[in-house]
Image (cartoon, rainbow, N blue to C red):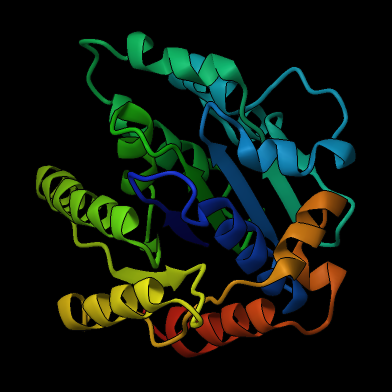
Length: 258
């Protein structure tokens, strides 16, 4: 089982879209995929709201019951979706209280990793969507990762967010004494604008070793699929954005050794 965490300390750069699109493509390959919503704003959960029933358990429950995690207990927080081989562990506003819950307690940064370990044999891939806020939730998401994917919108403020994220990542990885492969992905690229072209060039110059060759261009099909509450690969068979993510998965992510 492999865990990919999609993170950036700036919102609106395509984290949730990246999680959902990659999850759909992996499921298309016959893999059992779990998406985990680690953001109290619950964008991933809201995306699938029409497909989800009522549940008494979610990611917050995992943190609340952290001292007694078993496979059965963790699976109570997993909800199957009406898309073959796709499931989600939903979020709720209560997840925001985890920061206070963990004050002064050791081991709070490894709870998600322990929960995912409990699911060994149930899934082939886990994709974690994250909050842009630095805190125990982001630390948990990074600690759980076998690989980190950092989407960055091709615009100036997102570039600054990436700089912060790289610094944060280095700090967390040092504290955890583990190496995590990192892939930076340029998203929402509009080649018609000079600003986007300049940002992409800066990414290529500054993050040459980390940056994926595949660039995710602006594609209205993402918005259409979101409106329908369906992963893009289940919504259309081909589109500019879907093809870019498919190439990213095949040419970079599945060959990275994660």
